Image (cartoon, rainbow over all chains, first blue to last red; front, top):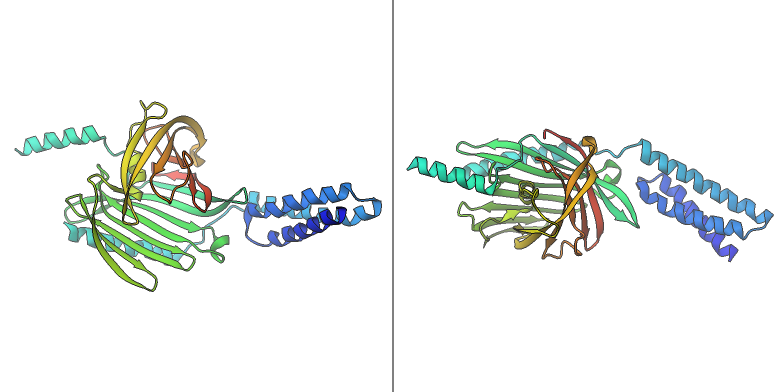
Length: 104
Length: 251
């Protein structure tokens, strides 16, 4: 059972670390949560020697968690200026104005 | 005779309620989608109003645009634009436009509301599909989806009791859909730069596959003269999400 918990914890710990570099926002907390749960379960069932490896992956997960939370709190989501979209909006309005004139 | 027309018009306008929608209003929302139980910020939705003048008439241009946050653009880019050109007081639509870009999917739709108020000329354009022109009938007083949101803001909910309903007709995807708005009381909601405000809680029910569940599509309008949408929670067949007001200006 310890082995299973450890494998799951390692898998999600790696996923968490990968998600840190992807723009997934709070969604990246999902593998962090799973990695922490299974990491602590594996730690509980480990002896002193086995615990070292579990602690390493728990540390990676906690480090990922700090970065994800930091990114969410200190880097607000922004929308890029999209000149194409702005032009489309302007053209749509101009076209609508002509259509409204024709309606009258 | 002209005097009588003027008096009748004033009485009708007073009876139906004046539009409280100001030109130059800009509301910015953060749209989130529930992914695996976590609300993930996906896009920015902007609702704007502007006065448009033609040689004979004045219209209120209601626009609603959605753009994914830059971090999502390389995965799934959304650039949607919904527009409605309405009478500035009655909010009766004359022209409705919908321009969708969602990933590789594009769609352009246009409804011209005929002056009789009972007919729509529709133009639909999709990628790799020839343009489709149709004419269909609607009931008098039918709104498009954009003008409906603004129309809702002109309703006086002050004396509404819990469970009290108001009906609307909306045309979407060339189908006329009855929409029922149920008053669910008042709640205090965060309204971005405006702080916490008491809001009317309204449940939106429509006989359509687009919206799912009972009392799961809810809009909170500030319980003041402006009735600004502060929070919108929606439930659609592919999940749930919300639109939260982050900035309001020109109100």
